[in-house]
Structure formats: C-alpha cells, structure tokens
Length: 617
Image 1 (cartoon, rainbow, N blue to C red):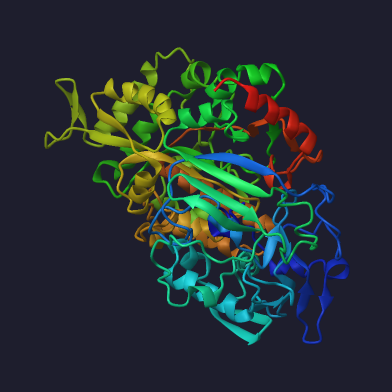
Image 2: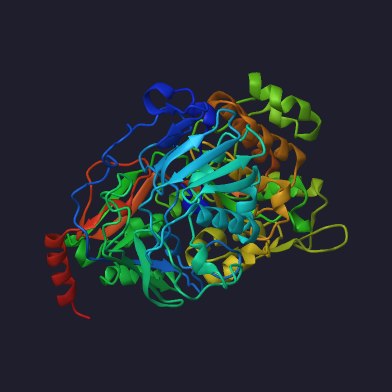
C-alpha cells in the first residue's frame, strides 16, 4: 500500500460497490449509495459496525518507546512536495478520510469520514465528516480543510497528485461537515477510494506559510502522533496524542500503541546495523540476504534477547531492476538495452551473493494475476493487435524470457548475444573499447544511494567491462540521491515499482508520456511510448476485474518488450529482527508485518532493557 499517495494507493470501484448493495450498503432517496467502506475486489470483509480490525489486540496497552533506524537524513516536515528531504514519519501525524485494512485486498473503511456516499451516476463522491474529528489544537476538521488540502496538493504537491486527481473536475464544501468531489467522467473506477486516502491538512495552520517550500517547523496534524523532539538530519521523535479524537473508532482500536516512536538517522547502513546490535534500535526490517544469513550471530540472538522472524507477504512483488534513463542518448536504442539485460548473471549472484533466497523477477506485476505469460491470446491479443507494427515481432511469436546461466560465472553465451545486439545498434570493439561509428566510447554511470548495492553492481560492471564498456559506480548519500532522482539526473540506477492488488492511476505516473517530463514524477526511466500510453488507458478504462487482468497483462507485455530495465529479483518473505520487548498479535496479515499493531510488553521490556543496560559499552 502507498499510504497518503507516497506509496501505492488503495483503490475503489463504484461499479464493484453497487454489485453488493444488500449486505453492505444503503440506498439514499436520490439513488446514491451510502457506505462505511470501499472495496474494489468484492464485498467488504468486515460488517457495518465492526468492533476493530481482526488482526489487532483491542486490549493492547499504550505507552513505552520504540526506536527505529533510517539510513539517510531529513531537512523538512513536508512530505508532499518535491523540494527538501522529508522526515520518514512526518506523514503519520495526519488522518485520512478512509484507512486501509492490512489484511484485506483493496479495501478501506471510513475514518475521518463517518460515511461515504457515491452518486448513482458515479460522477461524484461525498464524505460526511465525523463531528468529533479534531486537529491537535482542538479545532474541528472541516469540509473547508478537505477542499483546501485537495486543491493545494493538486496545485503545489508532487506531480503524482496531479496525475491521481486529474479526473476530479471540482470539489465543493456543501456544509461544514460535507464535502463533494465531482468527477469529469464516470469511468475512473478507483477515484473514490483515491480521494478517500487524502491526508487532511489544517488550512488555518498553513495560512501565511509557503506550502511549496521545505518546512522546518513541526506542522499541525490530527492523527495519533504529533512531532515532539527533533534534530534535523539526525533524530525525530513522534509522541502519541493522549486525547486522540479517534481513540475509540474501530479503525484505530488496537493500533498506534507506542507512547513514542524515536527514529534515528544514520548515514551508513553498516552503522545502522551496529546500532541495532548494540540495543540502540529496537527492530530492523532486513532486506539484505547476506546480512540475514550472516550478520545475526551476535550474543543477544544466542541468548534469546533478539528474535529473528520471517513473515510471508501475500502481495504482488512488483518490479526492481537497474533502470536505464531513456533521456540519455546512450539508452535510446532497444538493442542496447537488450544487450545490457543479457549481461546480468542472476544465477551466479543468487548462488554466491544471496544464498539462493531470491527469485528472478520476470514481470512488472510479479506474484499476481496481472503478470503476463505465454503468448497473448483472446482479449489480450485483441488489445495488442492494432499495434503490431509498433511492437517487436516476438511479442506475438515468443513468450518473454530472461537469459539463464549455469551460475558458474562463465557467461560467454550471453556476452556473445549482447555483442551481436550492440553491433546491430552501431557499436563495435576497437582496441578493447566499445565505440560507435564516431569513435565515442560506450560509457555511463550507475548511481546508488547505499553501499550495500555495490556488491550487486560491481559484478555486473565487470561483465560489461569484458565487452569494452566503461562503467562507473557512484554512491551518494540518500538526500543527494533523492534530489538527483527528482531531476532525472542519472544514467542507470536501481529502481523499484511496487504494485497493488488492483493496478490503476499510478500506472500513468510510472510509465506515461506526460509524467516523463514532470520533475519529481515516478516515471524514472523516462518512458514515452504511444503503445504504453494506450495500454495504460486500457487499464484505467477496465470495467471489471476480468478486463483489468487482460489490460494489465497487455501492459506488462509491452513494458517487458521495451527492455527498459535489467530485472533483478524478489522475495515473498519479510525478514525482521527485533529485541524481545514487544507484544505481537498472533494473526498474520497480508502485508507480512504491521508494526502499527505491536505494543511494548512491559514484562519482556524489563528483561531486555536490563540486559541491554548491563552490557559493556
């Protein structure tokens, strides 16, 4: 999930909503549908009036401190704009109109809103705000705040918001507690729930402030936490709001249990790991297979003070890879891009670097029904056939596949294929250097934001050097990296595109031609292809789940054929290590881990903290 549109939003379909009116919804006199929640994939799992989410402990105690670590820095508390590097937890101070369920695909429930009302013609959605909803200064959350937030994010926020909100024609505060969003079309199946995920900001607090500038004053929110002590670039402490207005709502019971959340920022991932080992950090999500296999053999683990657990994540795994910036002339030729794909030896890396724990990613929608396979047929073929002359022939004649090696590191066949592709693109080896007809060297840089990726990039660089390429690896700090990515000032880098159970409007931001030129967009590779745009349009126009699967598979097939990145790998496990001071609900969740449902167990914490305090410094 991309909460607050910083990641991937949960989506809604009015067509799907109207399919189950008997159990979940009530009809208003005007024929609109009034509901307490939204779902794209079927009936809501929880009935109206549910007590709490099933994966929480409603009696979980509140209080205690949890310490987390982030590699990077921050100089702003405004996560909604391009400028500045926002603090990682700064969005947690805001409430949203609806909130998602961590264990239910594509479902969200009314939170700031008491209910949601969808017009009979699907051309508008209304939210009736709860009268008890309050900002931290005690002032009510009003429809005027909702209108101001929407218009401000649309006009001054990151390009993502303009993409997501493009089908909203206008928004009106009909009463102090009722706000109505009017749509340009009835075809955007997910727009109601995208609007529901809108984080509501206080208009009165922002008056006189420049929203487009980095923010160093702690902002006002309405959520379960407020910003407490902080040191820019180093430490951020979130304090739980004692009189949180939503304390007894079913969407909040059993969640947000920590009294304070302290986040320490480190410039180096190795230092962050050592801080965890020393007990300065309480939990750590581990995304390095090497670390998970080798770095957790310290005494606290042996004594049972630190626990290692792997949770299965039942979500699409999306795509991660070495992305090529098509804004660079070097990567304009598809044959060049295909050659770079040939030279990545996943089998050797998985055996020698990753302890055999990863799976090669062969789809932009991996681990989901939306992943393409085999040859296009039926409705999918019908979508692609009009563009046959604009697509590589193999889209219709050969199933997509990635090169496979024997893992020995002797990748001669792939290098031979890569050289053939490069020659077709006008590149040849002269005096052991790959040059074009003008004598220009094949030279580029791989930009990274953490040294851990160097162990992946450097073997890849060695393979490319065997064909005479000149490739450099440059690692910068996360703040500089984010600035370079926002401006698309890179040649190649590691990119990751998360996906949800229902692909939708975010696909235009990922791959659309319009977003390719918008600074700060998620179209990191600069894809601008009319066939891609056409397939994205088909995804957005899908009337039902079957059509969505067909359109997304077609989009996947077109993206793969473009060879825009070098696919890497994925895992369906979430690995987390933590000091044994937490209470954790026993029921697993689809997202793997939801730390928001954990709490500090006083008895466990007393034992663990005593051991940490008595350890040699």
